[in-house]
Amino acid sequence: MKDRGLYALALLRIGLGYIFLWAFLDKLFGFKYATCAGKATGCSQAWIHGGSPTAGFLGHATTGPFANLYHHMAGHALVDWAFMLGLLFVGFGLVFGAWVKSASLAGIAMLALMWSSLLWPAQTPGVDEHIIYILVLLVFLFGNFPNKWTLKLSRIKLP
Image (tube, rainbow, N blue to C red; front, side, top):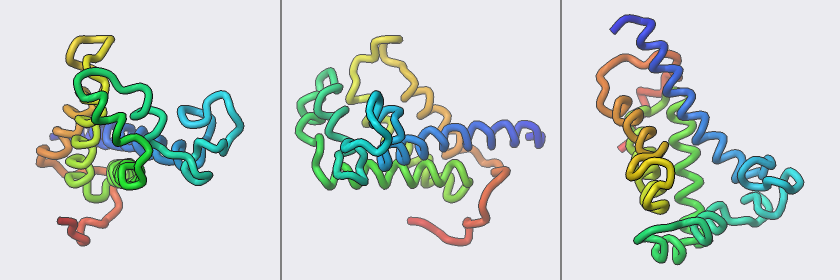
């Protein structure tokens, strides 16, 4: 693959990682985007101020055959921690090119769960942005190409 293609893939990797990393930061600090929309920055819904990053969405916005399961998971500390650590790991891993394959696998799992919490997608039956992001992460998971613009953390092996 020519270097231009590798740089395009690096931009795609960094862009998708930014989406995860921003979601983590917004839920942690409440930057008035999704978490504290219409409220002051750092509102009570921010995780750092005692809010739950999963209570709102899982408790009220889930639809479809698994809605009851997600409603019961909403706001539990273990679910909050797993979700936030997942966002941080996937975001950091993709933005900085560290442990890309592990971050891609974690991202695929998270996105599959997010997709299943919104069955059936309203915009396009069966396929929404979660599925497209999964397809992109599959490229990073199974692609055998050198990553451009990465931290050299590859010597630290993750399970």
